[in-house]
Length: 318
Image 1 (tube, rainbow, N blue to C red):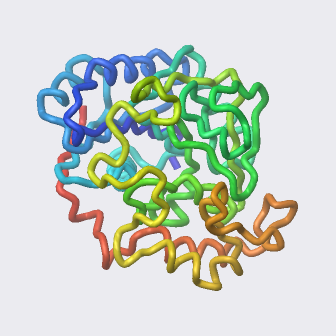
Image 2 (cartoon, rainbow, N blue to C red):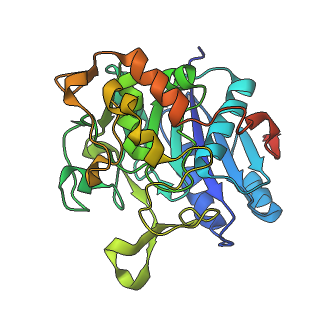
């Protein structure tokens, strides 16, 4: 394992919006961080050439991974991680940043890494000022939660700025569950952690970063990321069974093994609530290998159904 973190800044051109100037601003907020032990990768899905050239000119990057077909961010992120490991070696962890995330203080990355390395954590989430997903905790949308907070089994927050332990990649062959075309990936995260014997923690207020969004008619409930949500695979808001074949969440959660191994899904809506008897203090899975086997089979795509090596892409080392 190399002594560095892989940072993947994820952008998408499918919506046709031009957010290049904001990308540059956000990427440069990474470069201004006091923590320097990282490799910075831009993962791009169908952004036009002129946008990529502008990023190369104005940003100090280590690599750009260009995806030339319509894929989900789960898949493009996973592929950027694969290519990053091929070129730079296996990192301690991978920081996922969506295209709307910008650091607001120069020590925030350092604080996130310190938190990540302070305990047995599989994931560390920064708080964001928009679309945190505090509804999972029954909290108001724009609250600032001051202390660090362990995410209980079955709960979640939204994915915007989050470090993933490399053990997740080692265990499942990828970091992001990739059967999903749109929503609900985050509801599986606590179970990924449980399957590798680790926990998920949310940073305190010291690492609360900016997340730019657009709102329709200033309605806080109709926000969207700057590149659009699920631009390549549109579906009604909140759909929970929007998967790539042959996967179906209805079938997966109907399998008796799901509840028996300790799995849960979209518990905020009571789609499948995990069995607390599968856990110690609702934190540590009693049979993590059984849970891991179920997750590998059901929420990660199999090579026979989707082969990452056949993705149409170009990798640019900067």
